[in-house]
Image (spheres, rainbow, N blue to C red):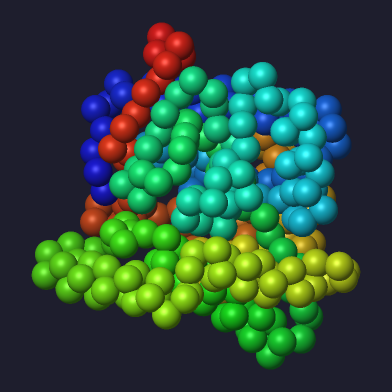
Length: 283
């Protein structure tokens, strides 16, 4: 974990909370359903808001609400925000979407080819999964693999969650793989299109399960639709937001014992190389 100055992290969290409030108001006004996930959901239950060292906010939408949000946000939120994903900038190295605050900058080491990347709210689209276990696992592995190859083909120095000699060995192997993929024609765009193909296989069907294919580990964000929807309102810092209908089950399935603080070496954040609060510096 990279450490912020305490005042810097608190200011970043205040700006992210402002973004979250605007996002929640917009979703309520436009009948768009979402739910907090990941560290944001853990923080809501365990801390009543941000995990103390966390520096982002994570929400999910199913495919129907995600498509509706993207269309309406581009039209109705464009005075203050912009959508950043692989569709709006072909150098974005991940499969999720950022709702970015205009006039700010939050640039990590894997984003130097991205034209602009502001302080953001992280949106994850949970796609439909087949109820058949074998078909689900086949689809997930295909989508996950192509998503990881897309990231590797785009970035020669990805973030690595380890240290010392192990980190140096992995970093060297990934850099060689980055060049090799592009040499053999597995470009970021080609890998992205493959990942899209597999993630969309069941998005025109009604299914009982949904998931985000592209997390760190396979099957990490796999859940029953009924555990997420209908969402319920929950306090997060000083605002109310949407949470999974069965948030304890969602968190237990994804993270196990989520109420115990992880050891310091397993805590992580996304400390950027460049951070500019713009006109929001005094918020």
